[in-house]
Amino acid sequence: MPKRLYLAKIFVHFMRLRSIQEEREYTKYVIDKRLCYYEPSKNKFQKTLVQELSSSLNQKQKSIHPKFFYDKKGSKLFDEICKLSEYYLARTEISILTQLYDKLPLHLEGDFRLVELGSGSSKKTRILLSILERLHKHIEYFPIDISKILKESSTILLDDYENLHITGIIDNYESGLEFIKNYDNKKNLIAFLGSSFGNFDYEHGLKFLQKINSSMKKNDLFLIGLDLVKDKTVLERAYNDSQGVTAKFNLNVLSRINSELDSNFNINKFAHHAFYNEYKNRVEIYLRSLENQTVKIHKAGMVLPIKQDELIHTENSYKYTISKIKEIFSMSSFRIKDIWFDEKQYFCLVLLSKND
Image (cartoon, rainbow, N blue to C red):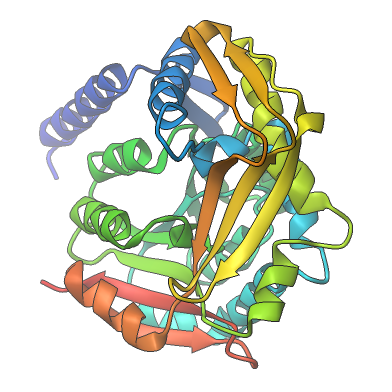
């Protein structure tokens, strides 16, 4: 390629990134030559939190979106949940990922970067990075996570993978995917591990999958974790652990709102409440008010009356049958390339491509 054309392409790429950065109100932070991350302004995030809570807490069924669980404390509590004996999801998914050392490379023709939605502490990420390390001299990793724990976990990863380059995006998945879509022409392996997709109801889940599909290039791949329908007792134990860590995780969202929006939720006046709805194949999670109370959220200009035993919905976790899995991916224009299960068939990982 002539030098002039090469420089022109670099300039166009730089200007495109700058335009996306300005549109998303991102600031770029360069830690060193192997690590940088993009982050929206604090005001933008606070504005989003105010707007969403002003709507969701004023509905007949009050709710708080589960993405707000993951401040620094919430992320650490979730890591503790993943270590609990009752919480089968993390260990079963890891058992499946370890099967992929030899199986996943069969689908990775050419050079891929890893894009991860919701990287968290990156324990499962390491398995995928180790697979890519065997295939490529240099590894690129783009974690997208609303939690600032991304900074900490990325720094630790660099110590363990000397040929790793990380570009982090501290934002919601949709904004991060839009950024990736316009970044360059390199092939992406997009990973959405855990069971976070289960937080979406059917309609919003389809829209999210279509968003991912539209952000993918022709040869990109998408790896997603899905929790399967199973015995009610197993499910309810997973979300009501004996040590009360899940309860702390659920209640912490109120502490976060107190801290960031100057509110006065008293977490001692709420209790964790979770059960499996067999009719809808989902675990439903709430915060139950223990008494009649009034909460003020000053930065949102809200005065919130809450009755005794009133429920604030914080999360759904849908569980899937194989037939439902095939249906939702067909409806969102994906083609299933492979499905892998753990021994008990509690959980599965699905590898997908665009159905063009």
